Length: 481
Image (cartoon, rainbow, N blue to C red; front, side, top):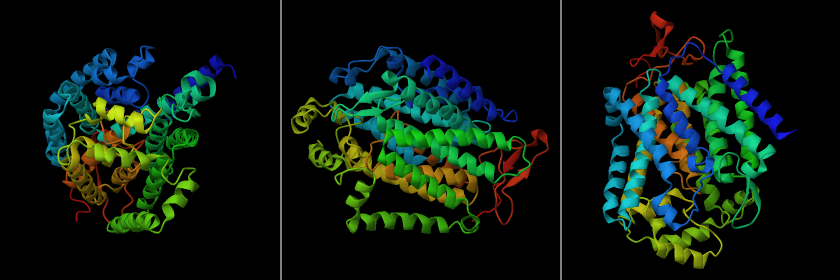
């Protein structure tokens, strides 16, 4: 097919997906477009690259960044702060229930003091605040669950089909050659196959959640079929891109998240939320035993990878001793800015342009050392505890939050994604903060007639009908511990 004709067909398909997934009963804020646009860029390429002004990528660029990108993010950040200032009380509610996250961000800011590059480190920290700001815009919306659904759809309907279009009809845009191996890789709208896999995994998991919700809704619900068609098409494209990206980490994370979602929607789990602990314990023990009994190499080969995780273990062994301080690290996002580190790694891995550890726990250790690792550990432990508690109050939503939290833990074993401007980090924080608020007894409002799904609890319903606007609002007194 001619590329121009293909572009027209894909454009019509994208419009069709938006049309099928429409819901006139939802009234989310126009400010939701701020995180949507932000995640469009985070999930694809920097603005400077889209404009054909991509920087050289050298060490100076790592220090200074692109002025075009700085201007773009500055506008988004100022706009987001304005929206959040207007929603003051709701924002404070979310921040007060997420103290481990606040502690981590403040420690990152404090670590700028001992960084060898305090200027660039401070700029990176300010940029990282945008992740938090965009998440708060979604969660403080008048209809936060509907806002989350729209965020996932608006991201997915744009990024995934265009990625497929680029790969099939614009190879100069959708494919690249690996700098290390020289092999061709499919990148879609992103600049790296692993990042394409990440975007496909995150958005496909959201599509699975939407499909399960619609399947569990009333068969006579208006618009049920078209929602299934739209989300089913999105899931098919996402799974196909996961296959094309050839990212084993994203594939495993997607399968794990999908398995959790499916199991968590079963009635026996909802009747006994303690079963969530058993499920997670089973997954953790299963993974540990696989490694302890020597199954790690077999698993890697089954996924088409080397037993050393495609060279990652060699990288880890080389960079861990380079940590400048075992207690506080190099400072926020400062380890890879060091010319000494750059020179050492070029000697050890010639021809391999390294700028991350390919393991976020090691990445945190290098930049923030043990204090940073403990902070991340507290966030994850608190996230799991609160997500399970939230599951007892709003199981349909909390099942997605648990899936994102747990799959993020697994994903970051071989990738570095607990960092600024990363979709995995953003959705992890969104899940943690959402679960924290629900667990504290503050319900997140959901919408109804066309797109809502009644919680299938065997006891009392979690929803109370209100006559005005025909809304359903979660009842904080229902299904308490």
